Length: 393
Image (cartoon, rainbow, N blue to C red; front, side):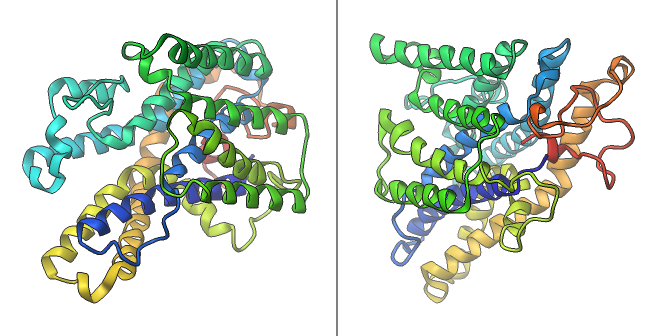
């Protein structure tokens, strides 16, 4: 079942990252003064990682421990992540070849090897030593895909055991990196303590699965504590302590969104939540396409000399509005159709015949509409049926 507050939190996380990059674009225009407050906007990534860990547990019920469950899990992750990321990576490569000046130093890493590594989510060092894919934002997806692979390996023993195995694997890798010094790639990349944030979210997923819920006052307290803790970080990234200084506050925010007594109920979201929940559906698109929108507005403002007229606030608002509009369009016209089509292909028509008769999703199944790993019968996306966004992040 759909968790609207979690979807809204995804929207806020993507907007945080967009604001972080907007500040850089404004600085390039000489408009840094009066921009968004100096808060750790980059911590939107930490919120994303916690949500990802939570959703992986929430959306995988006991049926995913049966035959074909692991393959279906990976197929859905591929269908969800790969198409749009490949498109933006190839678009970035095309721009780097056609008009490299627009990207500044961003296109310097363009090589056949970097393109291949990016498309395969394989950590690879750039000439300057930084471990980033061709499209820089993809570093988070390299972690996401690694987490999906580790999580999938643990399927088949129940959600608690799956999380325990994933925790042992990720925790052991982080510990090895801390004790043995820098590990060679790709292990050095995967051993970054930031991967622990997936486990924080997975723990919240298990907690929700026990039936634990918080009242309104408790959730407000968690949210305020999370915001206050993030605000104390100012703008500096905390290095190896990031999962504790940023990931723990992010976990408080996600807990406030996910552990409500009314979350998951089949009822319309609150008026203030509904727009953010809609944007949450497009949060992946917002994360991936906002740099294109920001740079387009920056180029337009610079060429037209509108910076002094619009000022930092006006230009920043225009950049964010363009980012949101582009994300919603890309989600509806590109991401959602491609995801549905690829899922249908990867699920395969033969799998439908082998499926047991569908049964209603129960709370024990994670409350996500994932009562069976088989595709839904009778027309995905029709009124009254579960759509992809109800089942997977």
